[in-house]
Image (tube, rainbow, N blue to C red):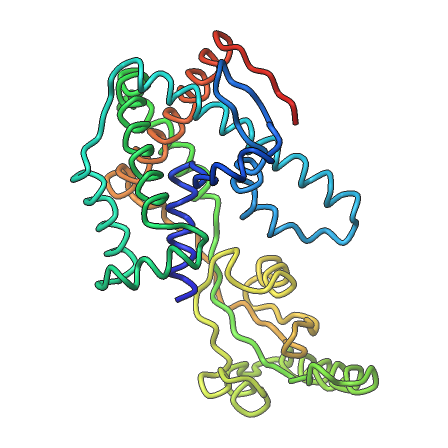
Length: 325
């Protein structure tokens, strides 16, 4: 249910719209900004910023207040852009049918594996929405997508040259990457262990490391005999791994060891590890054909965002905007 709620919230956020406020609330609501003749209420800004504001966790209250103010400013800026786009939509006579809204609602339901419409309404209520306000959000999203397809779409082109350049950049970064094949022996340390216990385990690990460096010592046999980790049965084998997979302290040692070398004990949450790198190899970059659709999607999104920003900036320059927040 929690994941489901999040997705509904995400669609609400993606719809870039706040819910409606009641007429009575509007009478006592403060005005955050006036865009041409449209009013943006402070409650709309608070509603838009709420998901991000709820995630703020800086212990310093002053910093938290600064971050909240910044989020409110960003939310207001987004709402101003939306108001201006709504005016353009009206002026150009862009419309959406109820059937198209139905289709989008059904898509969201399917993504969340909800077959029962009543259950879907309950999820919306838990998010502080009604079906009416939610449909309104989706309708506005369809209209805005249409406007952008007309205004921004023709400018967004991704050429084969763009894709090749992006691929070359990706391949360069990827081909410098290595992956290593390592084994380890773990001397387990309880998370609640005292300093003395930690030190004693380290001493034991240092002894094992010296043993592992002896001429002709079979590290995997030693791991089977001495390791206290689940990989002991496999001779401490960790298989092949790239950067970004293992704990940082562990990774740093693994990628700096020479093939065949045995490390000093490395501390992680599990205890002390003695590491041996068996071999390393450079990672072959994914082919252009495989990467092309992913790169195309990424470049299209980047270019769309860029032109959308330009378009909204132009609308703002032509508008009369009075910020009161």
